[in-house]
Amino acid sequence: MRKNQSIASLSKGVKTVKSLKKKDSPRSLSKPKKVLKALRLFATDVDGVLTDAGMYYGESGEELKKFHTRDGMGIKLLQAQGLITAIITMENTKIVARRGKKLGIPEVFQGAKDKVAVLGHLSEKYKIPFAQMAYIGDDVNDVEALKTVGYAAAPADCVEQVRQVVHYVCKKNGGEGAVREFIDTILAVKNPL
Image 1: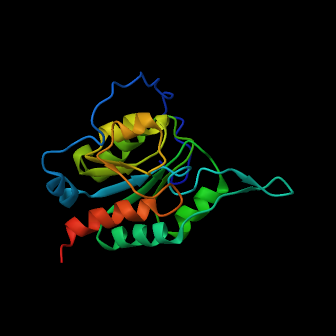
Image 2 (image 1 turned 180 degrees about the vertical axis):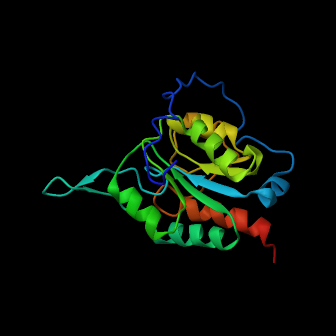
């Protein structure tokens, strides 16, 4: 599979998310430090996670997205620790391809309707079990991916369905450093003082 290509061949459509029963949030793990220490792959959604979920349009109709610089540095820090980094998004824009290239993210999947299928592809490609993957997402199309990985997170302004299935809810909103906050949590366990 080529980088930055649409994964229509992997997509089976977005599954309908049933109403979730109220339960304690975030989802608990018996040994979160053990899970965080074992992580080998970090994947993120874009809109509402790496960006503030706003859709900005210029006078000529061009689409603009605002990314947070510290999120980018966090991704570089993970890469320096040997983690595989990935972007998995339903959108398909040149902006995301450029951001992925600038950050040296080796796996950029756009047009991803079935994010679990993409995670499955990455699991096979890198021989990494789902339990050693982290994912951060914010909306209903991320729920199944969040339930699949070993450690799941969401920005503070995520939708309620996401809040109910993640292990960690950031204090920061999407596009305002939530990704860096999550990464710092991972790195604090991987590299204790």
